[in-house]
Amino acid sequence: MSGTSDAMDRAKIIFGGMAALAIVGAVAGYQFLGGSDQPDDAGAEAAGSQAAPGVLSVQQVQRLGIRTVSARVAADIPLGTVSGAITLPPEAQVAVTAPFDGAIIRLHVIQGQQVSAGQALATVKSREPVQYGAELARAEARLGLAEASAARTRQLVQEGIIAGARADEMNAQIRVARIDVAENARILRQAGANPAGEVTLRAPIGGRVAAMTAQVGGPVMATSAPFVIENSAAFTLDLQLPERLAGKVRPGMRILVPASGAMAEFSGTIVSVGASLDPVTRSIIAKARIDGAPPLVAGKSVMVVIVGDGAQTGVSVPSGAVTRIDGKPHVLVRTGKSFVPRAVVTAGQSGDLTILSDGLKPGDTVAVSGLSELKMLLAGN
Image 1 (cartoon, rainbow, N blue to C red):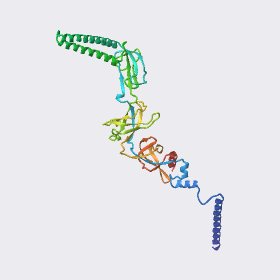
Image 2 (image 1 turned 90 degrees about the horizontal axis):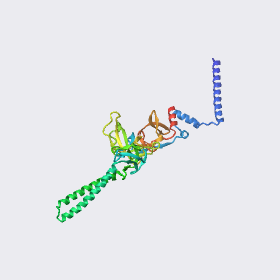
Image 3 (image 1 turned 135 degrees about the vertical axis):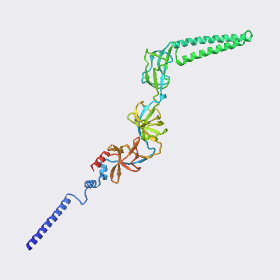
Image 4 (image 1 turned 90 degrees about the vertical axis):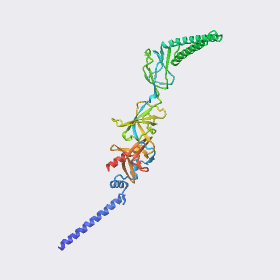
């Protein structure tokens, strides 16, 4: 029994000595390799990321190229962004008609050409101006004869040879002759016809030749419109307001169309809003007037931001701060050393800024670069 106890004591002493030697060797080896009692940066980063998902050190933020900005207060927050189409107001199109029936002998413009007010469009040959010219000459002759007869009649009345009523009759003939002369002269003047019966059709307004049915040698009638000129500086917007904006959009509100491709940014004002929802599209049609005369094309579809009337406020962030997660807009908000995704509601854009109506407060810090890396890191955690 005593021998067995001694053997166990010896075994414990040997095992303890070996463990002590192992610890001493490990410490010596660690010091020999340049180690210290503090973990290195990589180890700290790994340990930190394992301990708290989303936590990033200063070195990690710099290495990933992450920059942050603070959200700012945005006044006049947009009510929303809706689809619209550039259209022409009714008064922007003017039909050019011929004053007489005839044939086109010369064309001076082509379809799509820009013209100025009064510019010649076509020359029409017609018999009617010649007839009106002849009638004008006859009316002038009748007027001369009536005036000469009236002069003689007044003299006879003064001499008492004839009654004064004859002078009144002659004066009435003079008035009729003058009316005939004035009417024929007015018709020829407005038609712009020359003695040879040629009439020049001119543009009534400046703009673009939008439609043209005239052909050289072809007939033209006084009841037809061989040209249609549209004022290329007068455009409107037809807006399709969704049901959620019914009752919120009113005449006088401002609208903004952000720049897109070759089209520059422009603004305008709501002028009318429909009174009822379309049963098929569940939307309301509104019209807006465009400020200035931007170079636009009728029929083009655009996205329109309805600015609102200042009753709402929100925040603005650079557009690069907004990313999509699961198909919805999010921003990556910095809280301490962590970045967390937060869902937001976008209300529109103003230049390089995106306006948010919900999800973020003024002063919140959001990432504006390195978003892809951050999303991958957060997804991995």
